[in-house]
Image (tube, rainbow, N blue to C red; front, side, top):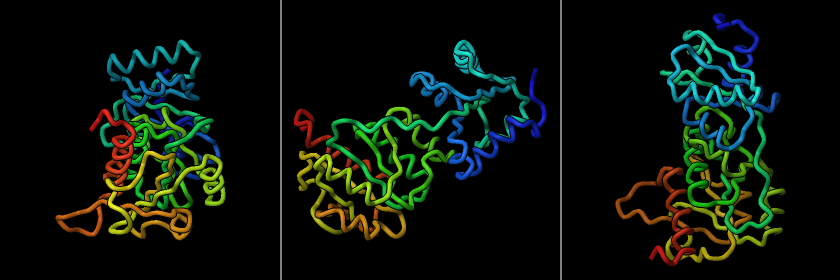
Length: 262
């Protein structure tokens, strides 16, 4: 039976998860939309609490739905206007999953950690997480003041990276303990301050702190990091977009550790 009312209890739950961080935290659940992210969830062996699909879902999307149905997942078909009501995109693809928040476990061995500090823009945070997963970062820590990693815009920008890398929210005391436990040298990205990033020594086990867009790094981040690094900008400008800057720095770390790239 197709759900045709936006007042349906399941639809109300999905709308709350999409709209409010508090609801996601309380339910320990989040929502992903679209065929690509649904495929990523399926490949990661995620078990949705609920799958919603619209009447006109593509054959590729219907195949995913059937695979989840085979796993005894609760699957509901919804009318187009209902999918439009629960979607956070202007042109929904007609497929939506409700997933439990189950961060991947922290690695036993760690030599490449990324710390996002006060990155409040969801799109930028998603870009950072996506870049971290691609660069082989082993875990991403979100310091206080950073956006909710399960917000819809973060999930869309991260493009499935949430299923491939641990993403953990921590206070600064816990962050310091992690860095000390793994004997990580901490570097802080700072506009125009410290060593030029290509001249820093990134072959040692390290943690890289990326500060927020407006105020930059917090005082706690500055106290934790003994060394700053920066990206020269011969063309001028106050700073780079934080997502772009983080990718440049992370892949410089990759380059230094993989001499075959030189």
